[in-house]
Length: 72
Image (tube, rainbow, N blue to C red; front, side, top):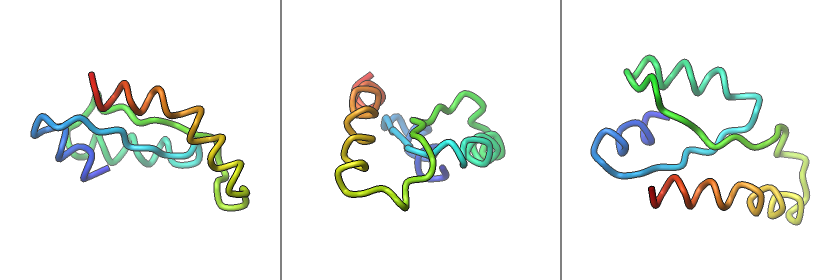
């Protein structure tokens, strides 16, 4: 979160990806850094037990949102 907020503060678009398990922690960190409107890209949790193909499918689903964040 720190890196994402830092780069956004310096005009560089970011797409910080977190799983659903970490949404509250990410929000708390962003707010602690003064970035009350900072948004993350959220993917389902857990990720660790997924196969390579399942992780690719997750990435495919998040791809368009990530590109939008980086190019907006």
